[in-house]
View (cartoon, rainbow, N blue to C red):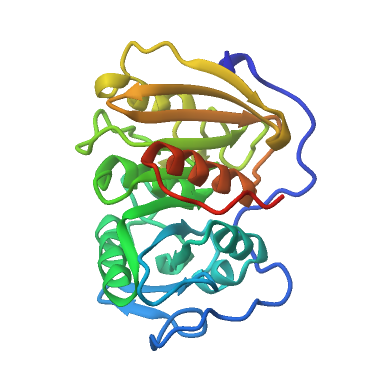
Length: 290
């Protein structure tokens, strides 16, 4: 079982928030006044967006909404080569909201800067109005505190996303006892040697505490039709992951994948989650590019 999967060598690079990797790639051609170079604005904040190069004006496409880690920015995320290539290979838009003070607010977070559940909902409304993005083909992902925010989106905005692929984040204390939304398609990745967001959680100052990942996971395991299902264990050797999956949660998939490294993010983990989600939904995706 995954609860016994511990130890191993740390990944060479530990990341707290994605930073730009080299020069930015050209912006997608669009008639919109905002996107990569200029932020799109909603009443409570702003976001960046990039369309895939092969997007057609008449075609409604899918999108991955990515939430940066602590100290990160939407501008850096929208230019990050790994994220840009992932979105391009999948043929989807990349949406990067900007966290207030470069972080995110949710129950238990160190500071409550704004209502980020409402902010993300506003971003979805605006992006699907401005651009040919299919509101039924959007997946949320994020890293570190952005990954934690994705857990709260899955809890509170489950009907606005087709699926969720958080990395190295989880609920904070006090853990929610229930979630109003339906069972989500949820693909979570975490490092067992993570010291920034440890599996067991940790205190942040004297006012906040990251929650225990496995304690928080119990909410998803026992939600609705997921309760009582015996998970399937499997390995994804190419991606360095050991996983457990529940696949009969009212037709939804609940998946937890662990690696022996630290606080790390790989775009290929998110790409795999999109392909799994596409298979569940019957979406067409381009052939895998290795």
